[in-house]
Structures are given as structure tokens and as C-alpha cells.
Length: 134
Image 1 (cartoon, helix red, strand yellow):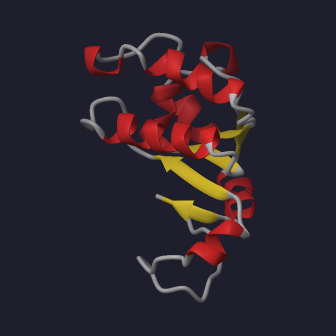
Image 2 (cartoon, rainbow, N blue to C red):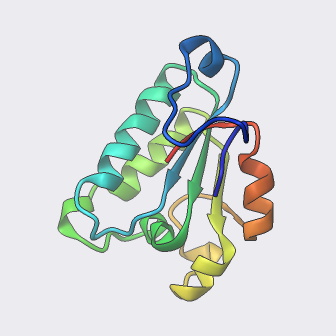
Image 3 (cartoon, rainbow, N blue to C red):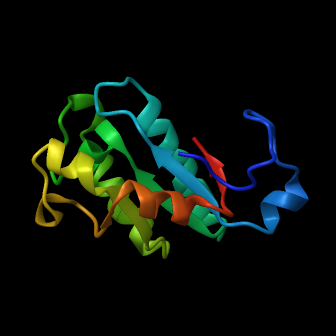
């Protein structure tokens, strides 16, 4: 999935001025067994939310498993509660890839926080114009 301006080369950093004018999109693409990746991304999301940055979260592929009510690994035992904290900070733009939810046998009622299930085409539209951190 691509984010933001199509003319930006992959890996190019945004300047602070560019970033300030955009909503930040943060994607969770790895499942609960990917080491510290999920926790580090959640910490970044919490920091951005606490600083009142406009933030949109995307849970893609195996990353949808992070939305479960119960953690899959001991390393992420506090992850579901921390997700709830994001909602308290006003983060309500949360999207989960519908095909991945189906692949992992998850329904909307199985998720710790409210997330909209969206198709890959809808995800592309939602990600356009965002400063995405993948």
C-alpha cells in the first residue's frame, strides 16, 4: 500500500513542515510474533496521539491479529489495554483490512477497539494524502 504523494521516492523522509500539514498514517503489518515491532509502533502512536497529531491507524495482513481482545503472546500482554488508551486520546480513524480479518477468522466483535473493516481498494484511497509511517 502506498501513502501520500506518488512522486516521492520510497524511503524519502518528510520535512517537519510537510509532516505538520498532514495526518500521520501508521500501519501495523506484522503479527504478534514479529518481536518488538508492534510494541514500538504502538508506543509511537501513543506519543503522536498525546501530542495531538492527527493520526490514522491501519492494521494490514497479519497485523489484524493485534486487534484481538486477548494477546497472542506474553510479550504483548498489555497491548490490548494500550490500544484502548489510543481511543481515550481521540484516535478514532482505525482501519482493518477486511480480507485479513476473514483470513484470521476475526469479526468486528472479536476486536479490542472499534475498527472499520475495509477492502484493499478502500485502503488505497484512505492512505492517499497521508504521511505514512510503515
